[in-house]
Amino acid sequence: MTRITGSQILKAPCCGRTMTSPAYASINFSVNESWTDGQAVGTLFNKNGQLRKCLCGQPFFLSDAMTGVVIKYDDPVLSVESIPSAPYIKDDEVEVLLSFEGLTTEIEIALRQRLWRISNDSFRHEYREHMESNPSDLPRYNLSPEQANNLNALKFLLLNCGNENVILMAEIERTLGNFEAALELLNAAPKNDAKLAQMLKSLVKSNYTGPARYRDG
Ligand SMILES: [Zn+2]
Image 1 (cartoon, protein in one colour):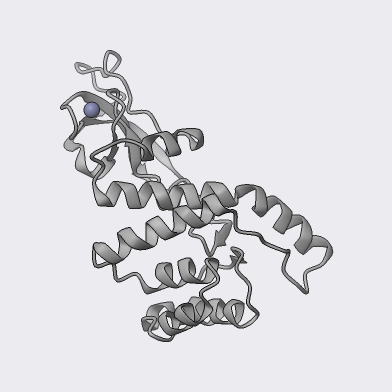
Image 2 (cartoon, rainbow, N blue to C red):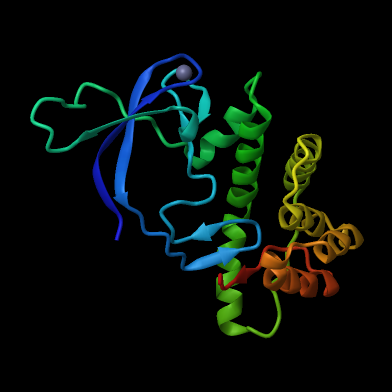
């Protein structure tokens, strides 16, 4: 069960504006579907769920804006009614935000990962339908030039900031069709990710570039 108890008071790192965000007493982390591009359907917190848009237009990480102040719903004195809540970033806003100058590397990485997932959403529908009628093989996947550009830019950013997420890097290489590079990365995957790495290797070995659905844990 996810339960909201009140509002976190945020101070935007970009311009100092005061906003609110729901404060959670308990969070439901259950995931119905996990995908190799990082999409977790059915969970309240997708992996990029912590990015918000400031009222001035700039994207920011929730964790960079926390003040530690929480105002409870039943607080007899304080009320957050007059304070605006920090907007979530909508799918169709991601590309616009990516065109902003002066984004930090971390924010650009988060936005590009989100764009990757959004760009696969229509394929997810095809995949589910295909698997219902024909579970023995995977549906055909075509990477568009725009998707490839986004993945190459994401790869460049990750390499430049010393990212050590081997699985993420391997997924980018596999999706781009760089199967040898993907295999090399997967062979170096940490023990904790052994099961997922094994599954990704089987996708590489069948020269498959599309995202695949899998069971977490
Ligand atoms: Zn701002």
